[in-house]
Image (cartoon, rainbow, N blue to C red; front, side, top):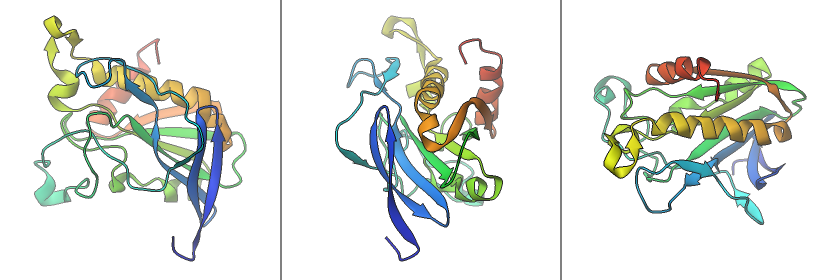
Length: 208
């Protein structure tokens, strides 16, 4: 930890998180919002992550869901080359102003043509937005490629797993984001490319 940062703790109903405080923004990375309903089995729905005991480290660069290099990497760079990959990367990041009180929330959904990217990628760092706009920023991973979209009724998958992942993430926000100084009644969902498509879909979904 460099001299311009210091440790901070966030206490939520799911457990305590150790993050960092930098220039009046608290940063918490790799927070689990869900786990597979059947651990170790692909194509199962996600359920709420269980609470944990003790202090969970939320400072390291989190995993993303499995993916091949993006076809746009030659233009944009890879974006997730430093992230590990995991089939259970049901994780989100939170950036919150240190003095937040009833702050609005922005939940950002990443793009990547439904096959690449990740909300925990360094591309989608919400620190500056949180600092300059005084809002709480949440970025989230969702399942990609065949692991999210393969539609095979015989294995119990209808191809809509990423939507269900995102609904679980929004439920996490409703249950726990108030601990950051946010107002869970003021949540805006936005996205880029594939993420914008999901944001539109969620906007039309009563479940969201």
